Amino acid sequence: MTVEVHILEWDEAGEEHIAEHGLTVREVNQIAANPHLIVRNRKDRRAHYLMIGSTHGGQVVTVALQKTREAGTWRVATAYAATEAQQRVFKSEVR
Image (cartoon, rainbow, N blue to C red; front, top):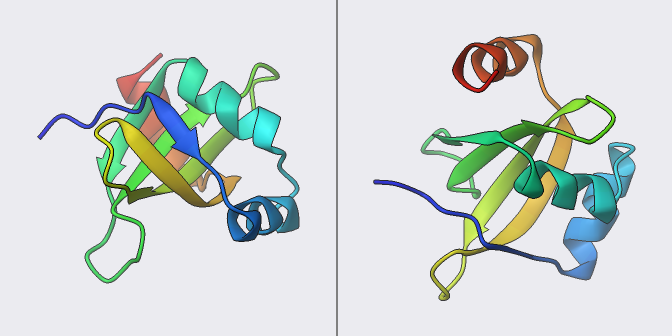
């Protein structure tokens, strides 16, 4: 299944959660606009997919995405600095 992200949907909880990880809505939106990789999340997680990409400043970030009723629209559950393993996957697949 190909997952396409056209719109990131935000709620207050998502914005607060990414702020706890030192990120802004603007930075997360950059991930969607820049080349990125989408991978299936572990089954026991609330977010169905992870989007891994880089900000305009080059920071590699992982964004946890939840399905919405609109095709191509995904709700941001959280975002955080990508783990070393996620960075390796991103760099080998996208760059």
